[in-house]
Amino acid sequence: MIKKLYLPLVALMVLALSSCGKMGELSADYFTTNPEVLEAVGGKVPVTINGKFPEKYMKKNATVEVTPVLRWNGGEAKGQPALFQGEKVEGNGQTISYKVGGNYTMKTSFDYVPEMAKSELYLDFVITKGNKTYTIPSVKIADGVIATSELPTAASANASYAEDAYQRIIKQAQEANIMFLIQQANLRNSELKSEDLKNFHAKVAEVNADTKNYKLNNIEISAYASPDGGLELNSGLAENREKNTEKYLNRQLKKAKIETNVDAKYTAQDWEGFKELVSKSNLQDKDLILRVLSMYQDPEQRENEIKNISSVYKTLADEILPQLRRARLTANYDIIGRSDEEINEAFNTDAKVLSVEELLYAATLTNDNARKEAIFKKTTELYPNDYRAYNNLGELAFAANDAAKAASYFKQAASKNANAAEVNANLGLSELVNNNVAAAETYLGKAAGANAINEALGNLYIKQGQYQRAVNAFGDAKTNSAAQAQILVKDYNKAKATLEAIKNKDAMTDYLMAIVGARTNNESLVAKSLKSAIAKDSSIASKVANDIEFIKFAGLLK
Image (cartoon, rainbow, N blue to C red; front, side):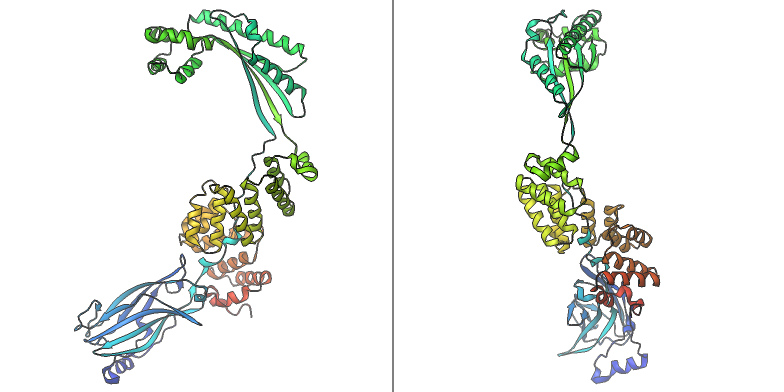
């Protein structure tokens, strides 16, 4: 609200002409500000001042230096001064006509400090006429600074959590190949005694025997013929290779008393395998061969065109095609990790038997923050080089409003992995709590992919005065910061809904709700919310007394 001093024009003229020609004081009626009530934006208090020198005020040989000054109890901040001059003065100031006066515009900005909440904006005047310099009374042109953007909501944001990679069921496969000679489907003893096949049978036996840690799902047989030769010939070859391999496998499974599904199929001409092997080879004309494969779909035409590349066909026949005459055996099985109950029991009895992933996963099995903390601390003891436990200890401390302890843990996490997205997001959030916006921006620039990055960015944008961008970053988050951004873009209905949806409401939640009430002229909401805020944090009472948001509701708490 602006309080204006109205002086009759006659009185003003008398003042202007009195005191041996001195220029007299100016009325607040000649000045307006935009915004009318000052507001902190991005750590600054910007203001545009529109002023007027009345007619017959500016002496032709005088200059007037006008300085905006924001004053509060015990301090002040000065803005950029502007110089105005009479018609006979040669200088760099704006010339003002004596006869008709003149309008002017000044823009200035003050670095915000909390004391400005209860302040007054003045204009100071220094007049120089000839060799004499004097001042006239300062003029108050605005009251207070709205500082809703500076409310410390970053401390109630959610920090980023470093997740575990624990999988109780991990799918695995053991493979082996049985190779065949050209135009043959019989299984040779040399192939059946290969190390590849021995390892396959050993793994299948191991998986089948250990039902606690493994589960054998099935065994697949895929038999192939190379793409040289006719389609009819290759179909018969591939089918026989499949049948012979399946008979062999079933005999081995029966002998080992292993029961599982066997799924068999064959591919008459393995053009895909051929293409893959050629792509990985060092053949001189491999690009030409691959181009033929892309140009022709008919198998016989493909084969003929490739045979026409005489410079390379012998190499294909010697090195590539033999690798395609095969039957591939694939045992599909699951590695079964500890159950939730087993992980909890292991932590209670001997945590050393747990992997780092199991330990980090254990912390997700409880809602008890004390147990979470104990798990993370044990993880740092057993796996001191893994950043995640340090990060998550910081996340717990941040949620408990211990920003200093949280920052210490985040820095320890950074010493283990300075590039971790979660760590950089949390270091950025810590800097925002301390109003170190530039440092926060640097950290958040390296935090892409962190699970709470959007919330951290939303808080950064609030500090930078980019309110709509902050709203977009928060999305549907139900936090004090998200509601603060919505208030700053004047979306009061959405801000109210956000505040109502916050699970763990604190004093700041109520304070923001009171601002929503004040801006929507809802006196009962203001009263209810402020009383709740003060009940949670008694220091809020003094803040309310100085907050210009509540100037119309000053008597509610008396």
